[in-house]
Image (tube, rainbow, N blue to C red; front, top):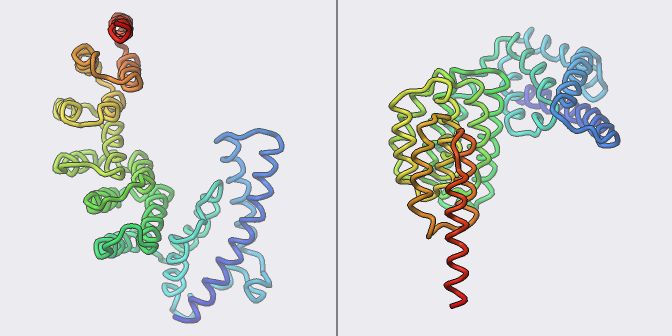
Length: 324
């Protein structure tokens, strides 16, 4: 196991240096040309993935005159390939190897591991459970250890999406719901969970619905799951989901967030709900909230000119009352 750890560190340290050099050069080139968009990043990722694959097949001084392929073949001949795979996986879920345009090079490494029998699904499933258990045992969420575990959990969610491990969608949902009781203020893991579920979790919409409807409150992580449910649900609408979001809007304190859920669910019946709320609360809404909800009605295809006029008249009346 020590030898596997040694070579895993050698491989990934060398891989990081290779990627850093290639990415820094590519990103600088983009910045020089002032061309910063997803298509260019996709092209860069493709190019670097091709270079990375060649690098994995080339002997390197950084890996003791061996190539990555040589190391895999060596451990496979010893019957210890799983030791190497596990050490590599441990490193990959806790590193920055998926930053920027590096996810396709990551895929090259992940696919090589799979070709040598590594089961990412089992490994990540166990890791998610392990991390949630550890998070539950930490009293202070400001603890550095808590932040590190949250970081790893976020990386795991990204890997689930990159490797298209849709069978882990319930694990992602369970993990987010499990830490909903924690007073954690960042939505980063929720954001990554949402992005992953939008890509791989469509068939698990019912599970997501059941989990969210059982919660009495939402932390920022599960707020992202609520947005995700609205977006997934918009592709397969049901009366049950519409009633759920309607009730959520009625009860939730943050009406702007709740209206965003209705917009993402994209059912025109929500126009009446939002207009009704605006009409009833013109005299007690701040300007920002009014225009956010007005915008929600607009996005759903509703008319708001009359309500805006009512609101402006209300503001004018307030100014006159202050003068008096």
